[in-house]
Image (cartoon, rainbow, N blue to C red; front, side):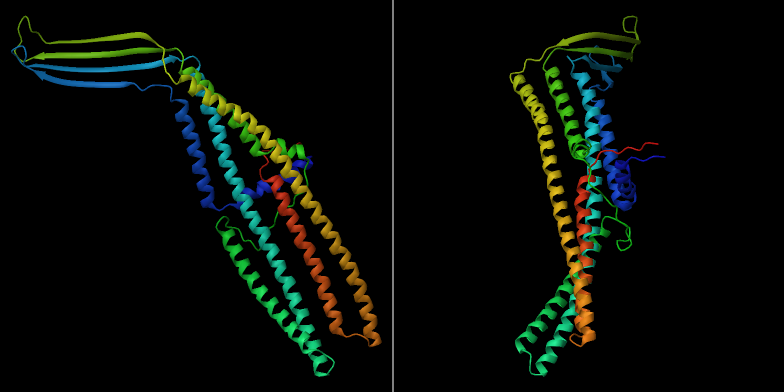
Length: 399
């Protein structure tokens, strides 16, 4: 089995997305989907007029005896030709269904992205907590060293005071981060029933710009909207032109006389009527109605081009941000090399009695923060790349 590179990168997300949303969100989306389907069926049949059933019962004595009359009829007045309006109304229903279902799918993708964004932010926040904890350790060591220097008469009380304030600020920042982690966890729980702490996030890579644009659901939806607007335009033209209606009815009537006579005898009858009618509306604002729908249709064509331009700019912006993150990662890796050199020199200084284990611990903690910052940047890069994937319309598997 061979899986294309493009599919391999996209497939985990959509497989992941099926279980990411909680049952309530799935039900909400399913109801929206079913509503769109039923709305399409309703619209597709809207050109068919209903059969009219009519029953009447009456009594009168206008001819000197009580006459009872019962009638029943089934009738229809059905357009069978409307200069293309019927054809385009059926076509409109189908295209509107695709468009509305696409909107439901976009809602699902937005929820998936929202959940993943929260998960990325949560994991970034947890790492920031670890960085703060390491900085707190270094701040405590710094206070200890400055306190010893101050007690030995070689330190400055202002520097000691500043070190205490720095520690206090770090502790407050840690509290804020922990509160933020809780908030992110609760927000995630509103969308997903999965455990955010054990959640394995998908990994993404940069995809070619043509795939990002051509497979983007926003562009697909804009093209679907163009079809809908075209159908509405054609329907409006047809509605202002010649139409042919079929008129038909089946009728049954029964007449009873209370006092029958040779002249007045009970009777019953059934008969039908069938015919055609030709209608031509003369509307003073017909051209305005047609022009309005035409302008809507023309605008939908422009919006496709505009959407492509927006997607190109979005793609380029994401790529620039990813490249900036890669540069930052290189800087942190360079800093790690510097810290490794400093740690090696400090070990030599400790053996020579020119440095202490506290100096070494500060450098080791600082080196750890470099690794943690790289982890944060990698998560930030994945969060950015998510924007390239979550609206992709499809993916392909080849075997």
